[in-house]
Amino acid sequence: MSTKLLKKNMESASFDSQKMYSQSLALQDLSKAIASYFSSGREAFVRKRYGSFRDDISKSLVADATLISKQIRLASSSSSYSTRMKSLAFINIMTQNILAYCNGLERDGVKEKEYLNLLRREIKSFRISFKKWRKSFHNGMD
Image (tube, rainbow, N blue to C red; front, side, top):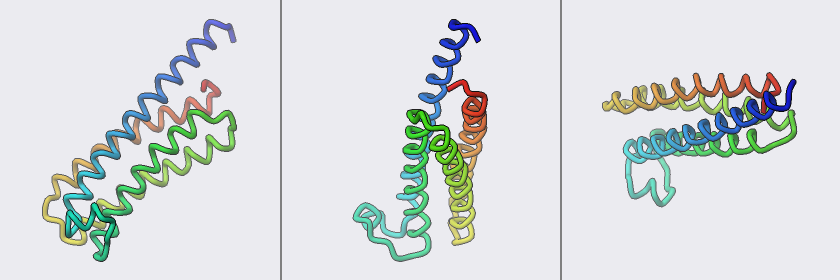
């Protein structure tokens, strides 16, 4: 591969990593807002007191969204192929979890389904971008 092409691929991969990280932060912010809204006591949520099933799901939603951002940073900064692949697999699991949390909140009787659908759309959009970004690691472009 020519030096010029390699440099272009590296710049593209770096841009893609920054884009993914930005998307993960947006997902994290949305998850925090929704979790705060759906927790039984908004003040209790801030103080990290949980008791109900809905509060437990809200706590998990925020934790997993935060972990996605951390794993994107790890995958994009690591020179270890194994570390990258573990981070990518972990991100995939966390996105699946968030979709499951939406289902759990819906089953728990959340009436404001438009918020859950907003989060579902955001996760689906994130996963489309994530799959493209993940391919760059398999193609050796990062």
